[in-house]
Length: 122
Image (cartoon, rainbow, N blue to C red; front, side):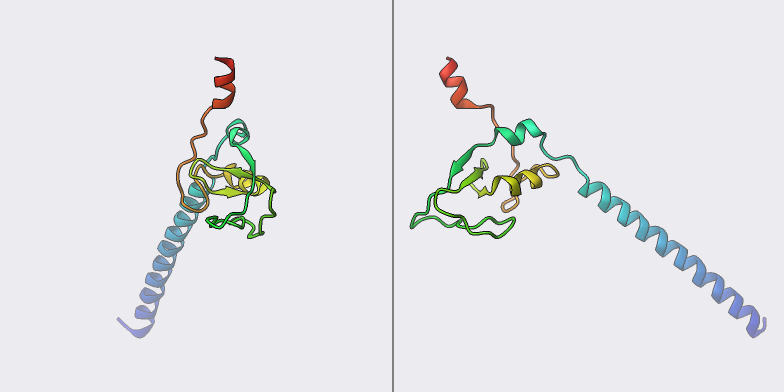
């Protein structure tokens, strides 16, 4: 075979490798899109999480919202997750529409029905 034939074979191999690379890359992108589009908590579950006033104390280790990095004011309303991490309600609500875990510790959020209301009814 002459040099032109080798160049043609080399070009063909390069095209096949590029097609395989692009195919794999597209599959990775699609798989990532499927993972990030997972359904978060429903709106009733998000609304069921308690909102409490933030209190500064000497033992308090969380004085800022880890979503927006804003510092809490004393008495500011924060949403408390079952893992005891707290956030601005609008910050964590946005997160929870697409995730079912705490933004910091990744604990699964399984909101319980309003226990205080059940106690009053009983």
